[in-house]
Length: 291
Ligand code: NDP
Image (cartoon, rainbow, N blue to C red):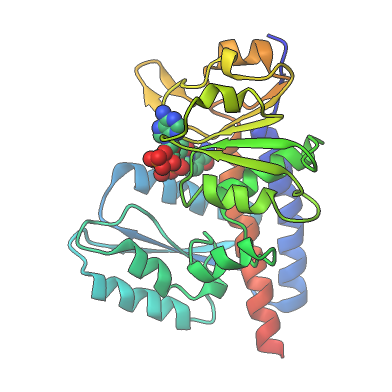
């Protein structure tokens, strides 16, 4: 193996430690405790674990969390009522509705109902639009984690050709929108690939920074990577041999200059960015009250 490891786990710990100091300072100066409300509908085991972890992360940095648990048969109207109540609750700064929602509920309708100022996942169209215009309120957690990982490891982004494989609304598209902006963490030349891309390997081999988010275990192999490139593997796939990414680590690490492991790469940063957004929301909402 020649690639250096981009260690998301220790970077996430460092960011959480920095954040804990900021939270203490915020509480001391405002007497407001940043608060995240997590809404969990039904009993999807993976969602229960995600929400439990997010709440534990909050505790670690001094952010208060509330859990609103609703039965699987909750109607869309009932969930919209809960969101409206949380929107109106001045003690709540961030609202997270854990996806997926049961099939009787239209996810888009629910995500659009969240007050954009409390939308710490940055899924609301207003927040997505702000990202595209280069004046974000919040950055979506996974793309933000990827950008932070690159910045804090001094990976040159400006002028780099970034190839992103995957065009989902939560990873590929917003990340492309962020890296193409002017200024720090941006100024990249971005190519977005997807399942209809012709000759994918010819494009991935041009990447100075290759980000893969497709949900296909070990799909990207070493021969698809330019020697010395930085490889960021967003994928999390549960297989018989445990968790693997979308990149075949062994062959990729022989060619790449830097590479993220799975687990321990992007995942821990995704979780941490939610906390960053919750403090940002608390700051903005508290400043508004003072105006
Ligand atoms: P989606 O299923 O929403 O999107 C997958 C994307 O990959 C689509 O754009 C699809 O193309 C593209 N794609 C699928 N197959 C291929 C292929 N053979 N060649 C090229 N492109 C392909 O996935 P998500 O973005 O939600 O998640 C992607 C992965 O990242 C998953 O493994 C997920 O678990 C993981 N993930 C990890 C996070 C973390 O914190 N580390 C957070 C979020 C996700 P098309 O649009 O044409 O269908």
